[in-house]
Length: 146
Image (tube, rainbow, N blue to C red; front, side, top):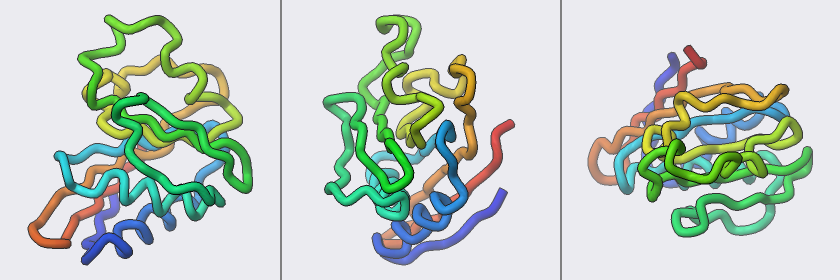
């Protein structure tokens, strides 16, 4: 695991951008943290590094958004509103978690995404936990999948 302290949203975006530089199509990044911890800010920086030019906002009410990046599709999911994937329609996330896309999943624990059965060519590349330390300070922890 690596950990970094950030001061302000720009630094949290930069942490996301650094992680994104090592991602490839088919990679999934799980992003956890309490409400307001900076999950979407982190994803915004990662998406910018992947060449997404559209504004990035939390897809809480739409579940997910697909963006066009310079190297292919970039998916951004927010599972906050789910009580688990077992009660949802099978294949709910299939359009987002594809071998040709890089995907970021906020609130993976809410949807049970930590136990996802992923399609061939799709793998969990990293788990990110963002901890709010007060004010604009955050601790961004990145670990490899277990």
